[in-house]
Image (cartoon, rainbow, N blue to C red; front, side):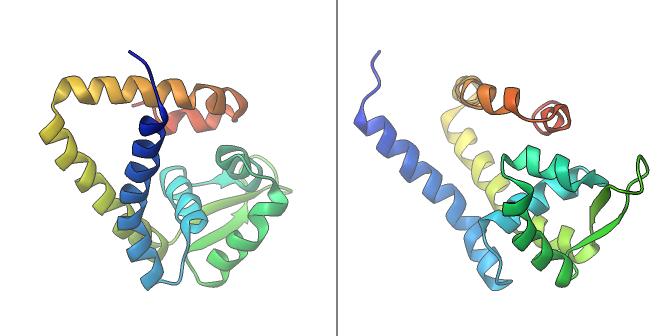
Length: 152
């Protein structure tokens, strides 16, 4: 079996079809994909520190500052002193933030469920294997707290 340019095109087009569902919801709230990624992680890991969040997203704290500030200002995320250290800031999603995140992620989950129902369990197992291999180097470079996002 060989992989070719068509496979890359399928990947790009599949990704676009997947994110388009969330983009529609996010646009209604004047949010973007980075906001969605932040909310996705914070909803699933309440109390995550800013440093841990930056590591989980694979971006610098400086790059995280602007979108996180917007989410804080709009009341989607709260920041408090960390239980581990007064110098660290722990982040949690508010009810409004969790609601927006679920509204954006819910249709994606439904879309994946529909596609898997068509493709079948063997295709799902293969897809998960491919995604784990693609994510391996990213996870290796991420903080240990990120691994829980794919293990359950």
